Amino acid sequence: MSIKPNGKGRYEVENVSSNFITSVYGRNNFSEYFRRIVQSDNLLFCDKQK
Image 1 (cartoon, one colour):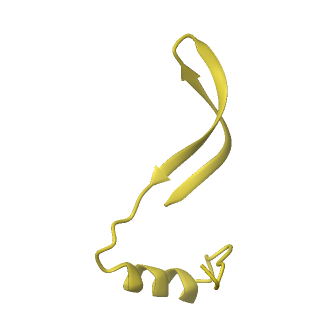
Image 2 (cartoon, helix red, strand yellow; image 1 turned 180 degrees about the vertical axis):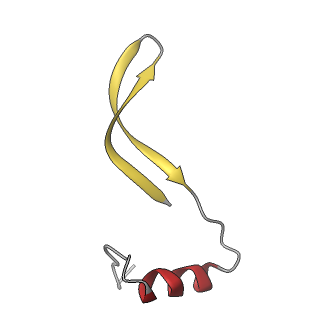
């Protein structure tokens, strides 16, 4: 999932701090998607134990 941190949003009638999910990828062909992210040097963090 791609996340935009430190955003602002509206909940009911108030402005609130929020992190926005900008896109979500399914589990089909995830290995190919992950391989392309690593090859293009766009991976920010990976916890190898999880």
